[in-house]
Amino acid sequence: MRKICNEQFEHLYLRELSSRLQRHLLIDVKDFNDCKNASEKLRNQGLVISAHTLARFFGILKNNHNQYTSTLNLMCKFIGLDSYAIFCKDIKQRTENALFNPVDTFKTSSFTLITLEIALANKDWKSVQDIVNDFNINDPLKNELVMLLGKSVRHNQNKQLLLKKLIEIEQGRILFYESYVDEDDPRGYYSRALKNYYKPRFPNYNNQLFLQCFIMSKAIYLNEVIDLTLLNSSVLNLDVPFKKLHFHEISRYLELQILLDFKKGFLKNNLLNHLEQITELTAGYVYNDKYTLEFLNHDRCWIVARSLKALAFAGFLKDALKQDSFRLLIEELYIGSLKNIGSVAELIIQYVLHAINKQKAHDNDYFPPKRITSFWDNETNSRIAIEAATSLLYAEEKIKPILEKNVYSFAKKTGHTWLFELLS
Image 1: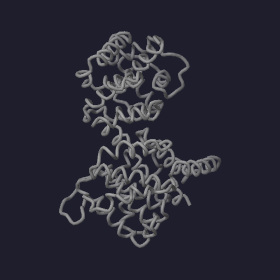
Image 2: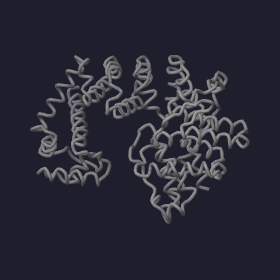
Image 3: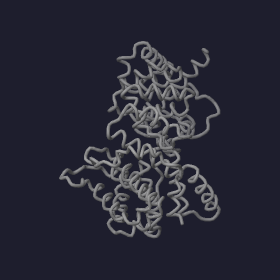
Image 4: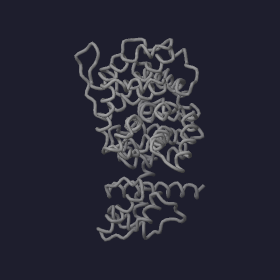
């Protein structure tokens, strides 16, 4: 037991040192080039750590042995501490204080993550609830906490118990159910959690709209039977208060309306109406109201991207792109995200633009297409499928048949067959 406890703390120490080192370096380390840049910054401060050593520390290269204490001491010196031993002592003391006297320690930013991780490892559900409920949702570390929480739920042997504990508290709803939003939904656990735990507790319009759109869209993409109890009691039949919706809720609503029209056989006749609504809402104009929404390019990409998926799945995307205003909207959104493909929405926009006009992509700054800059654990399947399909657009020689075989099988398995219309 003591050995396991020590290993847990050692994991926490290295995780926290990695996080602090990246913040001090002002580098988000994702590949070997980042390690070379980090090594150069350290060298400028008189601290010699090779790029290969850093790559092993950050997990870019395989690490066959523990880091040398001398290396860890240099890292700690860079972040302002005399040694790794002092760093570990400080972390351990603060973490133990947090477990036994949590109220103030939960407000100490990065230590919240350490405290949450070890509470989850020890199945200390009461402390998990306290940490999550007291966390400042405006903290810059919110996304890191959300990903830690989501990953812990996914792989927890007590998954159902943890799901129940999170739904019992307000910020459990916000930081897991509505922030992590497990798009991959392995074995349907997240969809079931929404129906069994989320739906009964949060009956307001926005929450029910999100729930119904997520579950029904997921079922349609996987060619499953739609839950008619959801459809019959649907808030989708009411007048939609767009000005009160988050851009993610708007995007899910538009996506599902297209999918439902497709299933009912109405999409051909209603296509232009859908395109008009997408275009106007992306511009921030709300129907029958003078209210104007303000959206960032990132938000607008999400509003359009889910509709692109739905149109492609239904086999109507190529028809939709014949409309000049809609096609120009796609190009505008892509140009707005050229510097940073930071979300799956922007990845979808990029894929569509490259698929419809490869020659133009080659002749302009659009080429080559970029990989996403931030990996989100809840959308791993989407990222893999879209990036692989984008690669397949330009693949040649030996790589093409490998990609082709795997893209088609992976997309069928994970509900991303919408990619196929633009590959044909």
